[in-house]
Image (cartoon, rainbow, N blue to C red; front, side, top):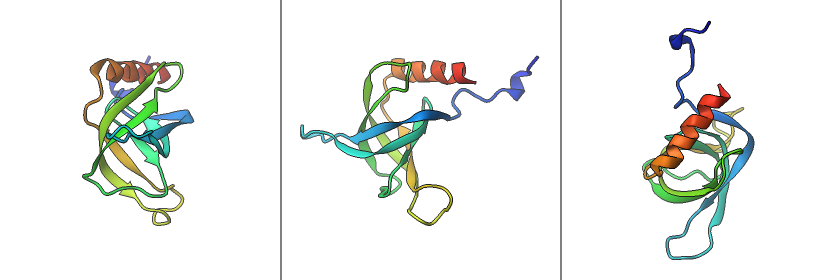
Length: 119
């Protein structure tokens, strides 16, 4: 039997079998542009692998598919919390940690439930 303190918290990031394609959303109505790949996700944020991470503190609108078996695509405002530039932290890949700012609560709950199922 597992003790509650032995179990990881649901908000811990979950590694994805298949990386999610992340697009940067242009507010002026232009088509979204490829931005990078998400390698892990939680209800509060994600890591995006990209060769050109942006500065911590910047906020951007992102669009991405929910991990399988969840369905749908979500758009939300995210803030860069930290970045890892190319070649500075080998063997880790370059990218940035993003915090969800306005993730819809129902989507956040779906992600949280999905992560709990994976543990």
